Length: 251
Ligand SMILES: Cc1cc2nc3c(=O)[nH]c(=O)nc-3n(C[C@H](O)[C@H](O)[C@H](O)COP(=O)(O)O)c2cc1C
Image 1 (tube, helix red, strand yellow):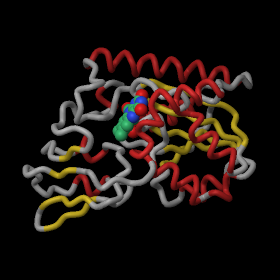
Image 2 (spheres, rainbow, N blue to C red):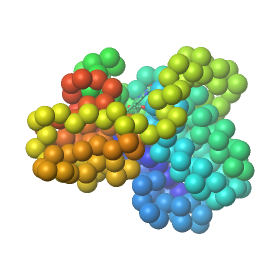
Image 3 (cartoon, helix red, strand yellow):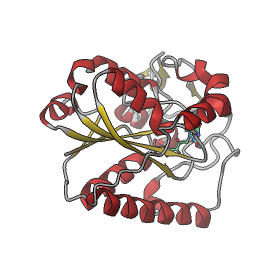
């Protein structure tokens, strides 16, 4: 078994690593790792984790699935989607795509985690509330692991009803946001050119020019750079960084 994940601000990484270790399987790999496709090829049972974006899968994740289309054939996959509040069919979004590539879907898990959109006050919770969310998420993953050991797989986000809720609840209205990479990342005046954003970007969308960060047109909206910038000089959906998200604060 292999735990494979994409994780902008490490919520999903936390969940996939926890589930994998509870199932006695310690190997996990990020989609960003150049060896991810090879590891995928070598394993038949996969835990596939990603964060929900506008009730959809991040474009980076979609691209990985498409690029490695042949490898998924016959794989048994459990889709694990993390989210700040709601997705409807977060797990189903990847599950449907993977089924088209010949994968067998074992189940779907939805895990509520702290919201990673750190430049908007919209879904912000207090430190204690986020701590409780992570505690509940941990308990849920422990329960999922114990069920899986008895061959019971959760089916969250996989039903037709979930599909309809995800579609009409959000995805339809925001579909354009996840259909491709975006060029809308904003670097503000106070950038001091430290380069942390460029070093951490999963799509190599950031570079340094004349001592300042510059964003290209390959942002997958993962929010990692925004959460890591020491100057709080990067924004995407909002205008000002409210609360940089780091899962380690709550574990
Ligand atoms: C661009 C963007 C869009 C998001 N859209 C949703 C959403 O539609 N529903 C939801 O519940 N959470 C949404 N979230 C929150 C994330 O899914 C959630 O915080 C996730 O656990 C982050 O995982 P990560 O740390 O592994 O990147 C969104 C986050 C981002 C950055």
